[in-house]
Image (cartoon, rainbow, N blue to C red; front, side, top):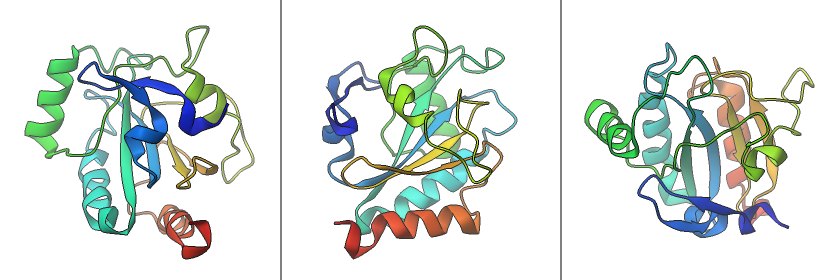
Amino acid sequence: MALTDLDVETLQGERTTLGALTGGRAALVVNVASKCGLTPQYTGLEQLHEELADRGFTVLGVPSNQFGGQEPGSADEIAEFCSATYGVTFPMLAKTDVNGPDRHPLFDTLTTQPDAAGETGDVRWNFEKWVLSRDGEVLARFHPKTEPSDPALREALERALSPERR
């Protein structure tokens, strides 16, 4: 099954596919949390989303409560926090397990992608990032502390948005 065909649930409780949610755009998938020291990355993620949307790009936030209980809220609480605190407009999935026996199939695939150091495996912490091409190919993986403005991340996004990737 292609990554774009995977069933997902939005933060609003709607069932869809990853492909329908991203709408054929390149994407940056980020597991997020509201009470993490890295939560201020929402600002840079929203800036990326706004800056690159016209070029066929979206950020996709995936809340998870698996790291220190740092995403304890309900869907409504998560949505309100993200909107009111960081002005988030990019799509968000429902709270999701990213590791362990109940890991969502999306993360079964994402965690096989090596990062710059060649490491694969479980999601390490909140705000780990994956770059997807328009057709759902996993192109790159970035450490949680990698800021949205990081040059290597921006380069990977440019590759995902390049005309050759259409």
